[in-house]
Image 1 (tube, rainbow, N blue to C red):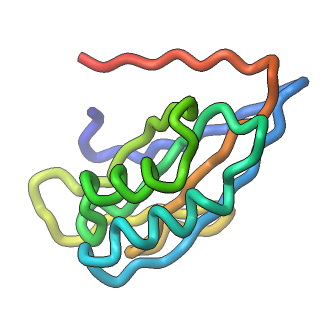
Image 2 (image 1 turned 180 degrees about the vertical axis):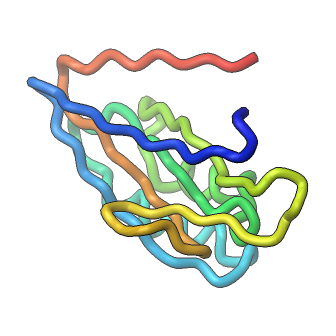
Image 3 (image 1 turned 120 degrees about the vertical axis):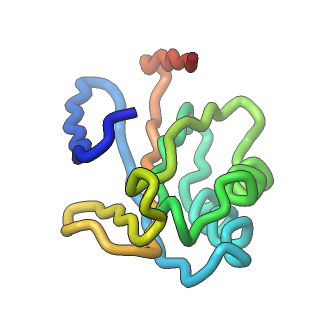
Length: 122
């Protein structure tokens, strides 16, 4: 966790394909439905992993995870997180190829047989 910072990620793969989907959400009550809708568009035989980033205020993380679990095959790992603004709880933003905006969910699907995923938490 890094307060007062921005995180930017760039990746390049030789044998793995990547697909990004994103959508807008206007309130926490839409979290499960919107997550399921977006995740279902990523499903393919060779989908290995989904990395998700969401607005930390307008998205209910638990409901988002439930919606994704409903849409994704059981063998597909999911990691990611919710954007935050420290203790302010005023505004968070997420973007894909655009400046971050509020109410955004971004999911990155990773595909291929050569990909190995590892993750952990403390």
